[in-house]
Length: 461
Ligand code: HAM
Figure 1 (tube, protein in one colour):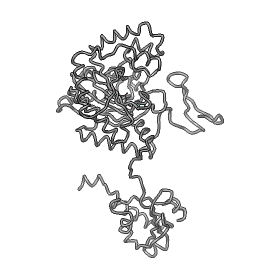
Figure 2 (figure 1 turned 30 degrees about the horizontal axis):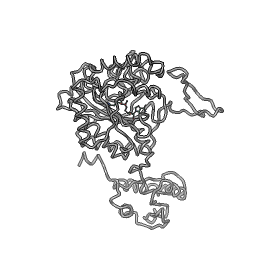
Figure 3 (figure 1 turned 180 degrees about the vertical axis):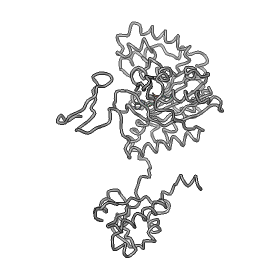
């Protein structure tokens, strides 16, 4: 917040009254709701990416990246013109030719567009794709809700069978297990049937709310006219109380959707996946048919769900493609990280330094440059203090960087063709001939700890 003493630059927010600080204390800062991913959080991002890639590769998925922005129409048609996302949360802008473009608020619409545009219906089906990307929603920033956030997601396109829905839920849960957070979430499950079977239900639902709209929140008063089923999973207390009393979709499902759902539940039981049947689960995107599911925090409920998904058999047709059934899931990576931290889960990472090289004088620096290069080449993670400071200052730095050993080279060492290796924990030092330094360091840190992975080598043998 502004301390009142400094000038605060402001821009007028899009929704009026939502003025935003551009600078704080005279320094430029990020817009509201977006964040830098700093190195410590990247350790989590890297680990999550590894788990996701591993589990999805095992299951035959391949990675896809769709553009950061698409024609606005894609999201209007796909997510639905009356959804909160399309109505209020999209970053939409015009390009220089006046075309309306939108930063992608979610991944499914783009993946399905790409499936059709690239003729993937000609590949063996189903086509299984995954993505790990930032998405953008102009939401009110708060805990777990950002304007740029990362999702990993996966889609199975080209086949309709409840076993695929079961696989989707199984994989999402397996990834949560690998990340150590599966037990924190309950799997909420519902079927919202086909669009045809929903018509009758929506009529009954609208009738139910006909004389009760005074008890609904302002948003739901509108929703009941534009997107009535969304009233069911509104988070406002009054709306929730009413939602308990509504007629249930399950009673209006067509026979095929009913059988599909029963089969799905049996498959989940077979896979030993616990789920909670939630007749009011609708989800905020219009493309779903039959299965919808969400991973809810066991203590916080629907607030800050970690991920959700479902079946969307009609989406390809909405985009002008051939009828193609599909099912998928996406999870929020910031929310996963917040839960991992809450659980005090530390991820393994390789961002540690083995050796710090301290030097004094031009001649020493020359020698050190090649020592540093040789050490790195064999996989010793090496940092050099190549500035003009004293050895004492370099040693302090080595300590701050947490290096277990420091190599010290001064004028005397250059003259005698040796280096000093200092054990930073114990404080002991030994003198080693310069030509033996790499061998000696490997002995100290252990061959098994070398970071010798070189993707380039894989290419050139
Ligand atoms: P979604 O439920 O809108 O589904 O988003 C999935 C997850 O993304 C949420 O559960 C949440 O963890 C995260 N998320 C959403 N909005 C934000 C935000 N503003 N800040 C932080 N995290 C957020 C979809 O996006 C569908 N495309 C999922 C899907 C894939 N359905 C079928 N295939």
